[in-house]
Image (cartoon, rainbow, N blue to C red; front, top):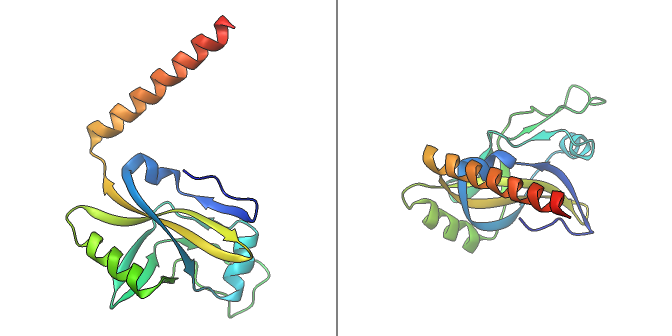
Length: 155
């Protein structure tokens, strides 16, 4: 995962995506938001756990992302679970639609962050992991931790 640059501020990270999917290709997209959503995001009120992106009628949409209601909002406050339009170039949407059309691929948001004052979402083209792959990843991570501990204790 690429680190967030100095001009960026991380809002939410989807760690579950790295556990459940093989992340193949990444693309950055803007989000079409209302004012209360942006204010809520500045207070870090977002969750990407169950979110995914889909292509509908030639447009990209972020589905299932939860942005908490703005506490100081009024009756025109946003709905937390609404679908949000992703801002991408036409050729990017067409390319992603073609790749998602392949068997077993999906678009998963991995990070939500501010970049130069604008909200961006990092989408990853992903293929679902099987249970054995998840177990293998956990075993590799545990082995790596044990090796690091052993090296640290020898110093």
